[in-house]
Every structure is written in C-alpha cells, then in structure tokens.
Length: 286
Image (cartoon, one colour):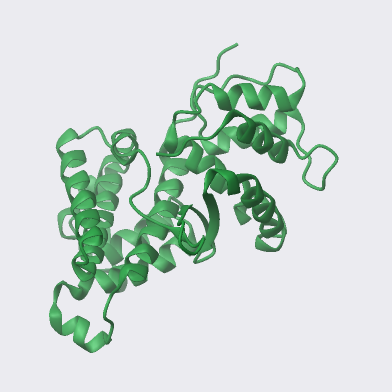
C-alpha cells in the first residue's frame, strides 16, 4: 500500500503547480494534469489558490494507492514534457527528494517512470505486485471470474518470488500480463470479440488463440500501451517462455530476484497506461 503524509502531499502539490518554475501550471492546467492521471471524483478548478486546491483534491483520495501510483509516475513521465526525458529527469530528482522520507522512489524502467519501495539495505528500489491490484482489475473488467483468476496468477508469482522460485515467478508474471491484455482487448473492442486479431503476414486469429506478442502489438497499435512499456514487455514475453526448459537453456539465463523485479517494473507502467487510456474520465461536479 502507498500512503503519503499530508506534508508530503503539500510538497507534491507545489511540485505539480511549479509556481515561478519552468513548468508552472495554472489552476486549469493543474486540473487538466489530474484528469490525465484519472484522479478519482475530480471537481472543476474553482478559481481558488491553486496549490491549496491541489492539496485538497489529493487529500480527498489519499487512501487510493492506485491513484497515487499513477499521480507520482505521471509527474515525471516524459510524455508530459515537450523535451521528453531530458526535461522529466530533473523533475524526477526533485520528486524523489520529496519522497525520500516516505521510502519511495520513482525510477525509469525501459524509459517509463515506475514507483518502487526503497529497501533498507542498500537504498535500491524494490518492485513487486502493483498496489491495489484487485481494485484496478475490477475497474478494467466487469468479469469477476477473470479478476479472481488474474489475482491468483499475480499472487502465485509473488509466492514464487518470495520463496526463491524465480523462474516460475517470471512465468507467472508473463501469464498474468497475457490474461490482462486478453480481457482488455475483448471487453473494450467489439471487432476483436467478433473477428479476432490480425497477426503478422495477415493471418487472423480468434481472440482466444491470440498470444502475448499479438496482444502486445494490438494494444500498442490502439495506443493503450506506450512504446517503452511494450518493448520491455517483449522481454517479459521471452522470459515467460521459460515454461519450456529448452527455451531457458537456449537463452542461457538463470533468473534471480533482480530478474523478477525487472519484470514487475514494466507491469506497473503497462497498468498505468491501460488505466489512462481506458478508464472513463471522472465525473465533474460543480
């Protein structure tokens, strides 16, 4: 779970508004930023001082770990800046200074910001199952049976990770991602439900026979998954194929804890991408 002290929230709000800085936002622009984050139950900016307005807005849902994950990553997402990562990295440095007391950090994994928990031993970030995963899945699919199966895959991957079964952990992560992208594609696209997906060479596959590579290509083409997250997920797909021992032998990799954490990292980015693309805009209240 991600929780932030109210003083941390105030500092984050000042960073978002950046009054007097190179990325200063008006109140309306701050509201627009929070809409891109899909902040829950977002009201229209009311013309009051912008930093207190952002603080009040954030505090109202400070217990929503998924929303906080999206918020903190979006602050330093290269997508937010015309100069891309060159502009985003200094913002990430300031954000990490703010988050230091919370033992949180945002690092770039395959070009995308991912929130991690700092370890006590060496101050390196730890990546695990995304926060509030069940709730986030319930927002992306209406099928409760699918949610239960996907949660079981993610939980079993964590069990394997925590007990040293690292190869089985990354196989479980890849399986979870494949299941997630399948349900997203079939629930959010009538064409996919009726006619399936077209792979390389023009061959058509029914949705039930679409593999992880095809699902990644499809969701990327739709703009639901950004390029960087897709590219690293291709590596997760390779690792998922370790379910066949011969593939692991040919690949020549003995997975360890770092390997598993590197696979969880892009899952965070992929989930944030899907939420930003597919969740309905939050209702506006006067």
